[in-house]
Image 1 (tube, one colour):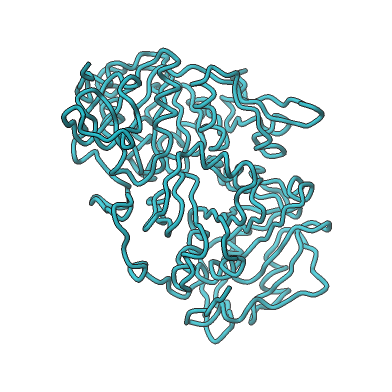
Image 2 (tube, rainbow, N blue to C red):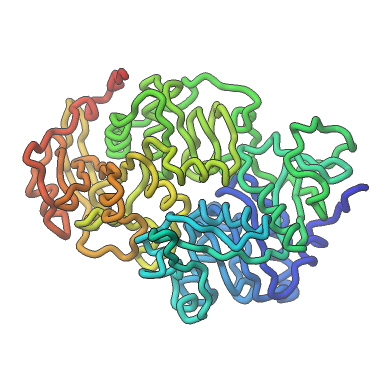
Length: 520
């Protein structure tokens, strides 16, 4: 039986007022861009559909107008449930203005919810999120007043065998927009040209078993029986409609308009093609993170400063001795940075997003390097809500709570800064005015207390100082050569940290404009 091939406009017309719409994708990978634009245009022209509940797992956007940003129109969405909206400014604005109810869940929970919905299970039981803003004892995932006033709950605190657990109830999904590479005439979907696998299968299963409509955007429709069984990632019985997306709405990632075979694993490129980082404060921090690497480690890197650790691993020539991973499910090689995050160069394997979070949640990560916007004296970290802007945790909570060792990476202060780096020293010419180490953070995305209770090793890496969580709270353990303790560190903190009795200097190799010569 042939799949029904329809236009993007016909697909958009299938979404009804009040529907729950699930949107697939990871930042700019695997996004059904043409379907999102068609729905946007329908609403602009007809003011329908209205009052949707929008659900997505990872961030879906470029920080400008693409991805889920296309749905950031007042009245189109009533409720937003997702893991991250830091790259969705249109939805962010509506959230801050209380024009929709917004709930932020750990990204691993959102992907596992799709499995629970597909399996008609009650929901997801997990330890992930305890003692963070996700916990009902704090904020219960509600990130704006409209969510708090709605009376709707997306998480409950339960005690099972004397242990605290968070429970995220399942809910039906009426429609989904997913992206594939090719479809055959029957509607079987392949993903061989995608930079990752993400959550397309789980999303389609959740919607089908909810009695909903599965719509897949692809690049091309080919003859039936064109695919090997191993290549079919979503069988036609799960697909209601197929849409062939126009070229201008088809992106492997937002990082490039061109197709890169090395991002989809068709071939490998020489690692010399990975550009070395210039010697600046970002490279200093990434180098300090690289000093924590050991052979055989499974490593997760966050976006921004932390993803520089991958570039250092490539520069130092030991990418093949470790496994770098991203919560999108990409394993091995070197992850892409910026809005290419989620994809990688010379990747070794592609797991589905829920699969990688099974590994992460169970403590499978040996080391994670993540960002940090605010840090307090207990070692609590905020990356999800600050300065009037809601970002969300993404996979941060799953990763930071469960990695054997976590390194929070970022500049010591915010604002315009100027450094001289070389000859084994750091010289601070101009310092920023914004404090990151403050007395009270706006939202708890990582709990230092929980980390200490579980015996997790936690480091806070900056260009001038290194801290760790001890029984005394946040403790200074290293200082950069050339930096004054009082002037450049203590005077730039909103609280007085503990200072280690054996305070050390950071490795001077970090501050030379040449490879460090790391050896395992």
